[in-house]
Structures are given as structure tokens and as C-alpha cells.
Length: 55
Picture 1 (cartoon, helix red, strand yellow):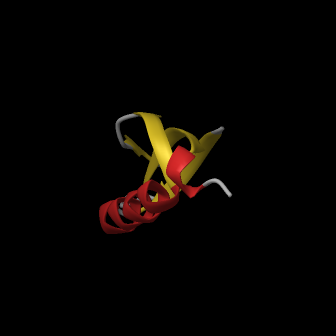
Picture 2 (cartoon, helix red, strand yellow):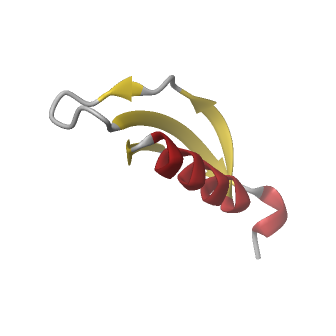
Picture 3 (tube, helix red, strand yellow):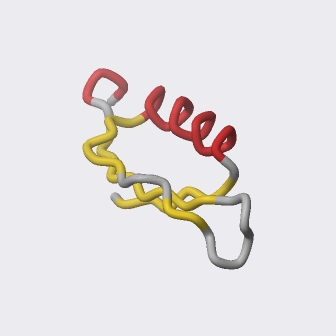
């Protein structure tokens, strides 16, 4: 699954911490500046379900 995260750098970092607790992150793009919001960025992440959390 591919997810797009948007926010400032602190929000992206916090989002990645939470995603890694639940999913395996298989790839992550660099942070791209948002055109519409100057201090915000977007980040693309590819994830898969973690095997150790499956029922």
C-alpha cells in the first residue's frame, strides 16, 4: 500500500514513528515541499502489514 503524508517536518516524523509501530515500511521518498503551503512537505511511504502483529 502506498500512503502520502502531508505536514511540517515534525508531523511527518511523528507520523512515520506511528506507522512503523503498526506496519513494515518498505520504501520512503524524500520530503517534497508542498506548492500550496510553503512550510509543509509531502512524503510517500510504501508499507506492508507486520508479520508479528497478524492474528
